[in-house]
Length: 369
Ligand code: OSB
Ligand code: MG
Image (spheres, rainbow, N blue to C red):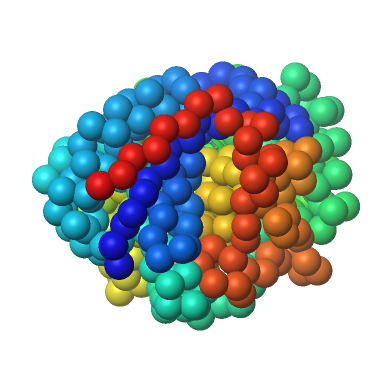
């Protein structure tokens, strides 16, 4: 396939409800959509970097820079025609996984559309629907957190994750367990603790959590191993897993028993699939994490989560959990049984609505070969 045009668009959308993690509170998201055009088709990818370097070192500005000055010129200069060629060529550039993934995903969408098949089929996905869960941010009070969880359960969600940080952890879990004794519950610290907090974290064992996600900093594989050795609850690694190599090393070190896959964090689907396969071969289940994506990024995640070793409920919720109006049609909806269908149309199987895209766009730039 000859890529004719690549467009970068910077978009801004407000959340239906603020989202607070151990990094702070946010009311909306700024993100980049990559559009790649060839043969009358358009492929879309989402760059999940935020405006500020909190979850990861990348920002929308660094992503725009490396896409514009390095990755996009490379695609045209080397006549790269597909996602696998791009992933291979982009390896020469260090870092910037979210920027790489955004462009790679646009090329995957384009490749699937030109083959006339859903992305899940191209990936070898085996599921037609995936298990949905909700990630609940930190609230002003425990009462508000419980009300929000109750509302999500009433909508049909069956797995809830809550964000924790020092001072919003043991009490929060005790409150949620008190009200919802049987709930499939897990927690995510986004690296807010250090090994000095080991004894406090071990107290989480009494709550019957499905997992404790990323208690320590991304580079702290060793401390995660020390905690996991003393804790019954499985540790799930998010920020720590940046490649197949780091996944393999984490499993060898016993730093955790579950891995969450985010395609942006690991630099694209080629790498994400390697992590999936390594985990599958080691008997380690994975699930799909989220970055509060628009419908474009979330549709991509649905296809990725159709692979067989995605064996735990995902941070994939319906459009209306995030946005008043999603960018895509059809919007993503929750089905009975806390499930979301994997779209069946060609490519990502959802279509960005021009008018909604235009309204959310802060700036855009088109590049041609
Ligand atoms: O750590 O999983 C995380 C959102 C932004 C940054 C980091 C994380 C999250 C989420 C959101 O938990 C999950 C979702 O998209 O529904
Ligand atoms: Mg996480």
